[in-house]
Amino acid sequence: MNRNSLRAMLAAGGVLLLAGSVRAHHGHPSMLDGLEPVTVTGVIAEVRLENPHLVFIVDVVDEAGRVARWSFEGNAPTAAIRGGFRRDSVRAGDTVTIKGAHVREKWLNMGVAREIVLEDGRSFLVGPRSVG
Image 1 (tube, rainbow, N blue to C red):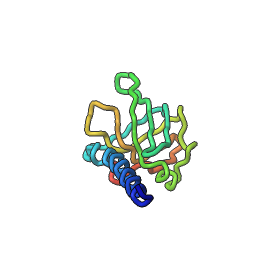
Image 2 (tube, rainbow, N blue to C red):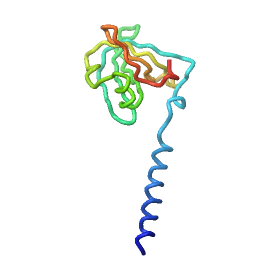
Image 3 (cartoon, rainbow, N blue to C red):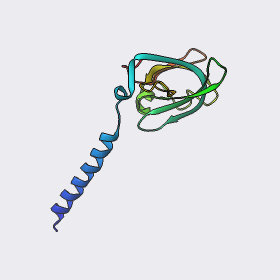
Image 4 (cartoon, helix red, strand yellow):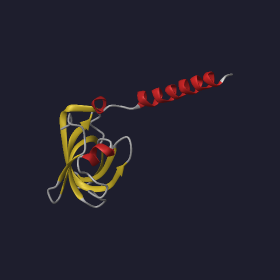
């Protein structure tokens, strides 16, 4: 096998690997019910700035006084950072309001975040424009 054949085989293998991961990645519209915005206020349990999306885990007290854990996805961390969000903008224990859209499965406490508002009134756009 010559060098050019080996390069072609490696390139084809790389393309196949990338195609699988691109196909597996979802877009926000596929998981949302854009007609139903959601706004929750709660305490941040965890913030993850990892690719492909920001993740906010929020403990929300429901009407019965029980704590319900919500999970919100945002944009890629780099997009939020370009908009002013920083790793230390929100920390575990902070009370926040998250505005966004609920996922299609209404029984899940999950959504896509558009905006996160801190107790002091500062807010950050952390999600897609089409949400909320």
